[in-house]
Every structure is written in C-alpha cells, then in structure tokens.
Length: 286
Ligand code: C2E
Ligand code: MG
Ligand code: MG
Ligand code: MG
Image (cartoon, rainbow, N blue to C red):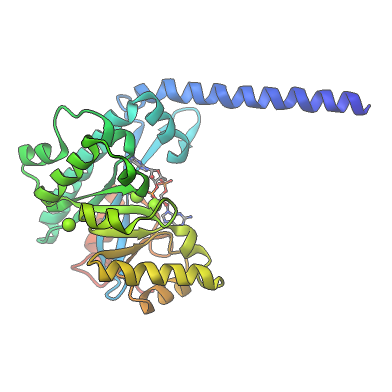
C-alpha cells in the first residue's frame, strides 16, 4: 500500500509540475494577444502625503483580465513578459496610458500630478525606437508628470544603456524611485551616482514594524538616510493605522497601501482624486 501511495504521489507531483509548465506556456503565448484584445488595463494606486493625508501621486499597476482564467496577478505574468521580451511593448503601453492620465488629472486639478511607472531591468536594457523622454516631448506632456520606478539590482548593471537612460531622465526632469528598497543590494554609492528622487521602503519592513523592533529600526534608518541624501521616502504596503502613525512619527513623507486604497481602475481613481482624497479636496479621514 505504501508503495502504491508513493507512486501516486509521484504521479501527482509530475502531473502538477507539468500543469504548471503548461499554464506558463499558455500564458506566455496568450499574453501576445492580450494587449490587442484589450484584456490588459492599468490600475492606479494613490500615494498619500502622511501629514496632510492627501493624494499626491499615483502608481500605475498592470492588470490582466483573462477571458477564461479571470484576473491574473502581475507576479505571474510580468516574469513571463520579461522572458519573452513582450514586456517592452506592454511596458511602453502602460507608460503611454500613465502619461495620458497624468496629463488629464493635472489639468483637472490645475496643478502637476505625477504618476509612477514601473520599468524592469529588461526594459532598461532593450533598445527603444523612441525614448520615454522623446515620447513625452512629442505629445507635449511635461516630464514632471512621470516618475520611473526601478529596483536596486538595476543600479549594479554597468551597461551603458542603463546609465544612459537614467541620465536622460535626470536631465529631462523625470523623477526616479527605487522600488522595494532594502531587499536588494542597497548601495549608498549608487544613490549618489544616479540622482535618485524617491526611496520606496519595501513592504516586508512595513508589515511587521509595529511588532518587530528590527523592522522598525530598518524603516526609521532608511528614512533618516534618505532625508540626509535629499530624497523623499514612500512606505509601501501600509495596511494599518498603527503603521501609518509610526511612519508619520518617523518623518516618512508618503505612504501607499490598502489602508488608503487598493489599486483602482482609472475612472474610480479619478473620482477619488477629484472628490476628497485629492490635493484639492478634504483628504482621508484616517
Ligand atoms: P511594485 O511596483 O512594488 O508594486 C506594489 C505592489 O504592492 C502592487 O502589487 C500593489 O498592488 C501591492 N500593494 C499595494 N499596497 C499594498 C498593501 O497594503 N498590502 C499588500 N499586501 N500589497 C500592496 P501588484 O499590482 O500585484 O504588482 C506586483 C509587481 O508587479 C509590482 O510591484 C511591479 O514590480 C510589477 N508590475 C506591476 N505593473 C507593472 C508594469 O506596468 N511594468 C512592470 N515592469 N512591472 C509591473
Ligand atoms: Mg512599483
Ligand atoms: Mg514595491
Ligand atoms: Mg532628481
């Protein structure tokens, strides 16, 4: 019986691995058509000023609504898009959407409104027929309306295409944020070399900061260091009032997380922005 069970387990295991691989293959193939078929959309998550509790910017986050499989998490399909090179076309599309919405919201508010767009290392290394800076110039959107979110690992890349794009952003006035800060190879030297504007404290440090003294110390130290270097700090994954208050007490500039809002479809985000949460309105009650 034991032998039989073992065989079954093995059989199940290989089948499950096979299913996983097949699902990946299916998603990778279908992602090509997803953009054309209008299955992708850009959601926007508000970033709040922790003092005024007003929405000061947003992060653009990709969503895939698959006709059979339902909503698919970016953690599942972004890596596939990177492997197949699809991330370049998709990422450019997210960026153009973000630029258009940022332009619209800036004119509605009568003040510049910035949207952060994630850009992965694969995108940085790829040749671009038209750079993001050139695109904004061509359509007449001020570069201040966009910030680019990169991860620490990218700054270790010595490719000329990485530093070239970063310097192009700096010269044009596109702000740069380090995403998931503290989880990669954090180096103060790179912060100085590349003129970074924001550090986004990874949500793994925020999650337990109320209970875990080490996490709280790390978060507070990132804030102190960032401010001494002239950078603004955004806390990611703020889910509780207690986290928000600890962060505000530590001098953290901005926060983003489910306490304030999930990522929202553009129309819902716009409603939030213009009717209370926005820089023109009454802010959040928290
Ligand atoms: P990220 O850039 O660090 O984005 C923040 C992630 O945290 C988002 O996950 C967001 O929904 C989630 N989040 C926000 N607040 C909370 C909270 O309070 N609690 C928890 N548990 N999570 C929170 P999402 O949308 O699933 O995106 C995952 C990652 O996929 C992003 O991490 C980013 O690295 C990547 N990604 C998303 N959209 C794009 C894109 O357009 N281009 C590229 N290259 N990458 C993208
Ligand atoms: Mg991000
Ligand atoms: Mg992050
Ligand atoms: Mg700068």
